[in-house]
Length: 209
Image 1 (cartoon, rainbow, N blue to C red):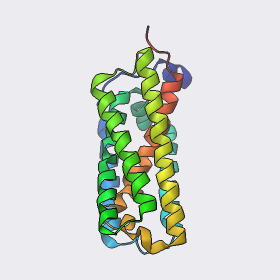
Image 2: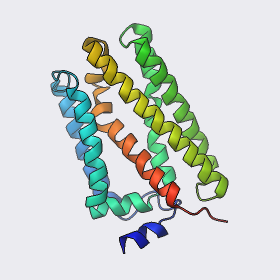
Image 3: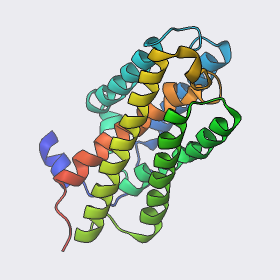
Image 4: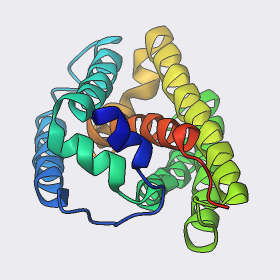
């Protein structure tokens, strides 16, 4: 039964499905908890690879919840794909990465590829969402291409941050303090999870004729 429901899932659907209320409430509580963790400085007190383990753990927990919590599973399977893409506008933080590098607060090896990569992904999202429907043959391919590029970008950002943090923990301290600590404890797990969910839906969907 679950398989038939997924096969019927459209790429274009409601931006706020009936199950949006509980899902948004949980996200709000999660965001508040992530803010309090950053405010208390707990993340900055953990030595690498501790913060990276937290990020990976939260991402896996979110993907698992998408499968195990029926409300979230229904939400993720029917919400308009463009709504998920729009969340990635949060990656405008790439501009902030570049500004922090200019101030000497982030290393060049992280800030430049992460900053410019995120900015390119945001530009793609702002082009696709208002102008391209994902349920057409061309639109589906464009969304799929954007999703693959965005997923490789965020995985590269996470990998580079982990490598630099292990080599020189102090160089990445800005990511462990507010406001950037919210990336590790809230934003990036959602970004990776939505990339995975969109990839599954786009690969499964048959484009409309």
